[in-house]
Amino acid sequence: MRTVHSLKELRTILRGYRQQGKTIGLVPTMGNLHEGHISLVRKAAEASDIVVTSIFVNPMQFGANEDLDTYPRTLVEDQEKLAAAGNTLVFAPGVEEIYPQGLANQTKVVVPEVSEGHCGASRPGHFEGVATVVTMLFNMVQPDIAVFGEKDFQQLAVIRKLARDLMIPVEVIGAPTVREDDGLAKSSRNGYLSEQERGIAPVVFRTLRHTADQLAQGRTDYSILEQEARDALSEAGLRPDYFNIVNSLTLKPASKDDRELTLLVAAFLGTTRLIDNLSITR
Ligand code: PAF
Image 1 (tube, protein in one colour):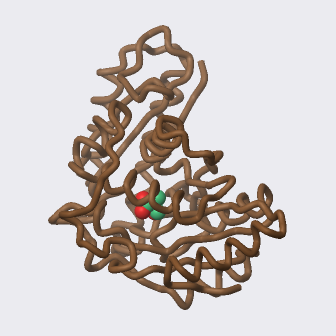
Image 2 (cartoon, rainbow, N blue to C red; image 1 turned 180 degrees about the horizontal axis):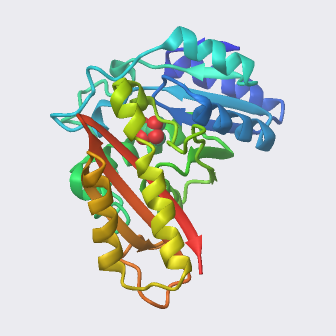
């Protein structure tokens, strides 16, 4: 498995693979890889001949008071995990390689509608940063397929829309959330939790499941269900950011007739912001 840091090297190597008729899969990441990421790499390996994993902590998607500086950077460990998972090539560019003119002077990609609300409301500019860097990665790697985790449900919807709207010839594939035994969704940010917080964190998924059970029993009083879920999170010691019951495709508030529903949640545990989601069909 090779690691390259420059776009020039990346393009040279990928040209060789393409000339051999190989299909290319892309797994964009910010590194600090866990089993969730590895499941994306395995899925990409099933669907394509070559797997490129990018590792880039993208400054454009972090807000001013967020964790850009402290976000864990663990390239050597990541390389070991990727090699074991059958990854072909790691693309780990520096910030200057991706944004040579700086962030302020960078052309940006804005994805309307699905970027709005939920994390888009709490983290202004976040999805612009994600959409921009993912579009650039699509252009740099020109993959046949790209795999993203369903844990970032709104992000996946944003990326599907940008690929469609900008006619980017890539198949965007979603991969199921990988969870700890107690239900907590795997996330690089779980590493920020203290031992006590880690004990509390599974309440996020428990609350999602409880609400999904209530919906399965036929309840349609969505605002009351959302409030009950926020109360359950607060009682457990979290600070809910949002708990929203939405139409799975539009991410707009669910209506009584919707059959495909997704519950989206974000909540702070101490200073750590956890997100998770659960989809159901009625
Ligand atoms: O999900 C992530 O890790 C990031 O948002 C992504 C898709 C790699 C873009 O920086």
